Length: 305
Ligand code: AMP
Image 1 (tube, rainbow, N blue to C red):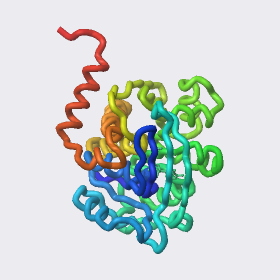
Image 2: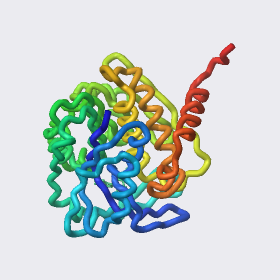
Image 3: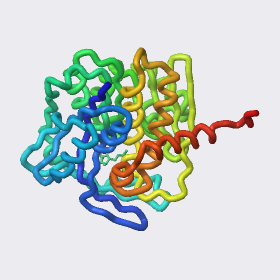
Image 4: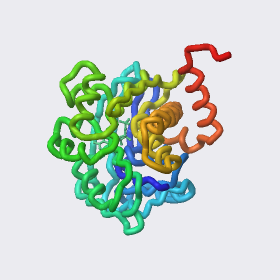
């Protein structure tokens, strides 16, 4: 099964304490689409300007990412710039230029409208809703969000929540959204406001998953060298949604989501090893399978006979 992915497609400038790179390919949809493409075909929806490299369209094609839903507009591509502190965990946004995004009205190509799996990667909730409106009978809808939307477009975000199967957000966002210090209480509260499942990401400390009466917690893959944490969350969401679309035949259950979260974490852990999408571009299925096995071994605490 395919998965529709809508989100930002960007040119980023990223600064870490040791390196700075400009005009990197980024954006929530770029990371999510490439992450998902390891497990299922992707139908990408977004917008780029005339400064966007044409070679990327070729790359998408080669990766089974259908870019029919990516509009090419006159003007500049969305630009974002961020700087990381020495711990590579805290990040400051230095600048954002919406450019062609300012007047973006996503229109799903006819061929996309029957897609069963949908990932609303991080963009304004009104745009996420607009895309969802055009999908005829979505089977499983995942959305990601960020602090900006919790702070500036809360009514639109609240209206989207009951339409979601799974909401993904990070720990500080979950606390901000609910006013709860405890992530367990926050996860439960968010679930009660609409989505059937909620996943709270804790950066280098892993992720939590909440269902009606179910709970799951996993660690992150312990990496020695992180070069660029940008897009980790988007790659997590893409890997997770791609895994569900590519493997789950019937109703998506909690057991499927547990595995999807591990695959999302595996993909995200590779992504941060290099700048931009460079690591994902060269990643192989064998490497994914090896790291998945490592995750399994790491989460066992009883020695098996
Ligand atoms: P993450 O590191 O997972 O938070 O995602 C970083 C990516 O999000 C970068 O490649 C940015 O281009 C993109 N991004 C940053 N701010 C926004 C925004 N307001 N809307 C959509 N995408 C954004």
